[in-house]
Image (cartoon, rainbow, N blue to C red; front, side, top):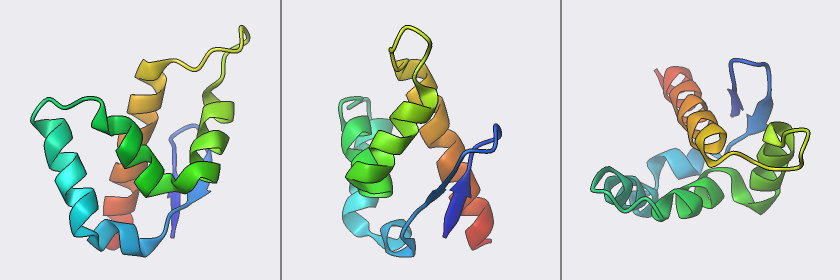
Length: 86
């Protein structure tokens, strides 16, 4: 399925990850304050190539990728996936 950001960025996400118990466990860990799991969730959701593509999309003129922008984008992509499933 294709997930989208509000700014138009699109990325393919495997439907299987949305029904993956271990992915749900990682999300639960993030909700419990284990913020380091955000990187793992991103890789599970997008794959290595997808993470690279998203980072390039978010990279600023100084070559930095804001962690705030990355977390916001991941949230938007998750919302996009949820709306596609409903």
